Structures are given as structure tokens and as C-alpha cells.
Image (cartoon, rainbow, N blue to C red):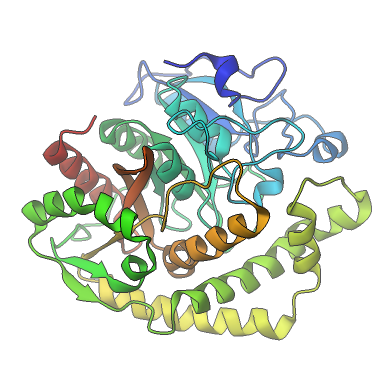
Length: 397
């Protein structure tokens, strides 16, 4: 287990801690929450000191945090986030970037960087994050964790800072599939009758082609385990337009929503931003409405396509990220290349509102890489159970 000071996952200063409010499926577990979820009596900084300065201390605790406390878990603190959740590497200029405990010379991934670092470092049993464009799935892959982006709208985001509401979700990290399922039992709505998984596996071609060869090789054992459970996968093309087109449509919708959500505050406050964040908000401000409208039109068609493919309970499988986490020494240009290649993949579930769980099943040059399982909306519980079966087949924690 890592030392708290070494991992740098928690927000500086006095930690927000809360005892359980009841007993349930999470008895005996500790958790942390990304510092965009409100905890009564504690500032919500959203990763930026000017946000903290211009917003009052939270008067109430976010319902999702209360759900965890009422299920028996204890809150151990609030964790760092990329500023306004608008970034993928996990950097934070103001509060210091958390360590990646599984690959200390690499970025932890963002924007839920502190939550991933806290779990990977053994500081808590699980942690809440948010996932708009990959902010749970990518840190989970980079830090060697399980991570879930739930079906869009499955979990309330009341009491949480928003970025792009039609994509924002509340997800979580854990070191074991069993803990992932326990958290799901506390937070996710029950599955409707007959909405489980069919056992049909679909190997989505574009993300595999997009992945670096070393990443694809590192996931081979997990694919073999998956085939033992579900049989040989069928190969499918889910994005004949190409992953760059998915990324572009996602980027345009997200940017327009980010400016609609946060632009008034940015204009009024003129906040200081770290590298890359100011540029993203500048681009959001200048987003061509026609491009965003085209993105929304594409999303409607793409969502209908993917829902039809997965309607019977099939599961798509592909690399969570095309590569391991970038090195801390990576140039801004290299980081952006990785960002674009990665978000073309994470946009699949994002645009279609699907549930996606990533499993820590591979390594490239000693750094973790994850394998994603993706299912239709409302099949989150079944997806987590499948992740547990694969973990058992592979002998994972």
C-alpha cells in the first residue's frame, strides 16, 4: 500500500471524511470522491482555485455520495481532478498532478486522476469519478484498475459540477471486480426483466486496428479467456466512417455544451487555467454551431445503429485505449496525438450512451492497458458480472 503523501491523490488541506450512515453491501469499504461532487461543509474546487474562490462551500452532499454512505461505506476524502474535468492526461497545475502508482514515470490519466491514483495506490477500496469523454475509462486503463462508465442517465449527477451534460456520467474505480459489483449494487437501478446479456461477443474492428500492436498483443490472454466464456467473437464494423469522424463529432458537441455550461463563468471570472485548458475553452467559445448541429445529427443515427446491434444482449469488446499512458516527458504534440486516437474509441460509448467496463488485463513495457466490454444501456449489472467471470478465469484480483 502506498503512502498518502507519495500518491498525491487527495486534495491538499484537511480531508473531508464522513462515517457510514447505515449498513449494506458496502460495509467495511472506504471510498474517495472526485472534487466535482459536493460534500456538505467542504469546498468543491473543480480542480481550479478561481472556481473555489467564486463558489460557496457546499451546503449539501451529492445524493450519489449519500447512497454510498447509506450502503455502509466510509468517505476518506476528495480527490484531484483536471481543471473543470476538461483533459485526459491527469495534469493539474494548481494542486499538483497525482502519481500513477502502477507506472510512476507516466501520466495517471484524467480527468478523474486523483480517484484513480487513490485506488491504484491502495489508499481506498473504490472511488467515484466522472466520465464525459473517457475520464474514468482512461485513468482506469492507465493505472491498472477496473473502471465503469455506466449507461448515460443511470446515476444522478445532482450535486456534481457539469461539463457536457448529454455525455456526463458518474462512474467508479476499484482494484477488484467484486468491489465493482458491490458498488453497482448500491448505485445502479435494477435491470428490467430480460435485459441481461446473450453471450454473443462482437469484436469491434476499428478500435483494434487503431490500437498499437503491442497493446493488441497484451490483450490476447484476456481475449482467450473471454472466448472460453462466450465463444469465438464475431467481427463487426461499428464505425465505417472512421474513428477520427467519431472523435470530431464528439468534440464539437462536447465543446458547444461545455461553453453553454461554463462559458458565463469563464467570461465573468476570467480564471487562470493551466496548459491546454484555456485553449480548449477558447475553442469551445468559437465552436461553429453548424458543426455541433452536424455532430448531434450524426449522434442520433449512430446511437440508433449501435442500439440495434446490441439490442439482443450482445457485448462489444475492444482495447480501452490504443496505448499505455504517455510518459511524463511526452511533448504536447505527442499528448494531443494520443488524445485524439484515444477519444475516437471512447466516443463509441459516449455518443451512443452505452455502458462500458474496462478490465486491467495487460501490460505494455511494464505499464497497464485495459480491455473494454460494452453493452446496451440498462445492462450495467450484467456487464459487471461478466467482468467478474473474466477476472476469475484469468485469476485476477
